Each structure stands twice: as C-alpha cells, then as structure tokens.
Length: 252
Image 1 (cartoon, one colour):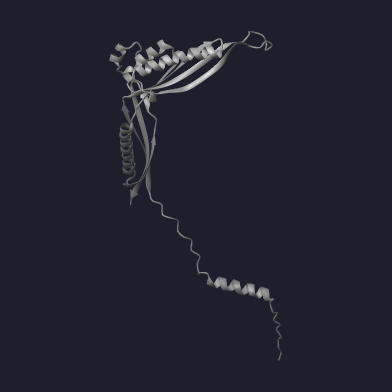
Image 2 (cartoon, rainbow, N blue to C red):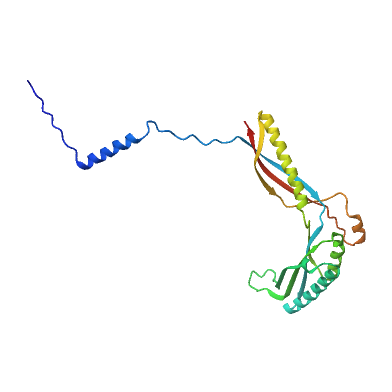
C-alpha cells in the first residue's frame, strides 16, 4: 500500500491577513454592479421673439463747444469764459434748469506752426493757445431746440452740435415692446409644435434683451417749429426693440 505525503506551506501572516480582507470585501459587494440611469431631460422648444414699439421723443440732448484762440493761454481762456458765460445765461433765461446744464469737456492746447520741408531740422514755432469748453444740454421742450441752437451760435458756440433725441420715461413704450416680443415668441413656438405634431406646454424660462432706442426719421416734419425758428429741426420717432428668449415645455 502506497501512501502519499502532502506538505502544506503556511502563508506569511501579513499575506494571509490581506487575502482574508479581500475575500470579506468581495463577499459584501452586491451580486451585480448597477449604473444609475441618466437623469430625465424634459423635452422643450426654445424660441426667440422680437418686439418693437415707437414713440416720439420728448427730450433732446445737445452737445456743443466754444473754441477760442489767443496769443497766450490767459487771453484764450478769458475770451472763452466770456462767450460761455453768455451762452449759459441765455440758456437759463430760456428756461433751461441748472440740472440740465453740464460741462462735459474742457481743454487748453498750445498751437504750433510747423515749417514746411525742413526734414525735421527746424522745431515748430509756438503761435498761441486754444481753449475749448464743451457743454451738454438736456432740453425737455424740443420745440425750442432750433431757437436755442441759433442763439447759442450767435453768442459764441462755434464747434460741435451733436443732437440725440430720447425719452425721459420710456418704460411704457418698453412694456409695449416686451408684450410684442413675448407674443412673437408664442406664435413661433406654436408653429414649431404644430409642425412637429406635439402639444405646447408651460413656459419654463424667459430671458429679455432690451436694445437701445433707435431714431427713425418721419415723413412729416415739424412744420410749425420750422416756421418759427431759423434752424429747422425734425425729431422723428424713437424705436425701442426688445428680444426675449423663451423656453416652452412639450406636453407628453
């Protein structure tokens, strides 16, 4: 009878402990690893709507300058100050409040004469100084604009003349543009839903982008004002544009 001798080698203590921990951890795991399902994304329709509303301006912002030259900076400044004082006095007499008068620029600059064809060898010659004083006026009675420009030029204004027509309180006009923009977005969304054969649901999100007013010339001019002043003025209309981005749900 043959007997077989089997030798069993004992594992090191550290390796045995590690193996026991791995087996215990594996036994504690669930039979199958489950990946959580992706979050449900609601079906939506995203559209943009545009709305526009026009209104005649009720305010004009006028910017002009008094520019004077002199042999010295003092001479140029004195002449400029006198002319601007006369302009400000006339504006106040005409009913313009101090809160609507603002100095928006002031500069004193030397004036040089540059020699011709000197190849940079001869320096320029100082011939005097120039002072520029810029005034910004908010005019709340547009009918007076032509007369004010005429009077200002007579008193010394000799540069500038930019005019911006705006509205003091455009909120009501902007609200009209907002309503038109939302209505436009709803119409577009309904058209898309109908074409896709789905039913339009609730509004999820609305974002607004309000634009600046855009002056739009009108065919009719201010005939009465043109007849009463020496400077013809046509104020036209301001367009207020609003764009909205609207997200609608799709009903299941």
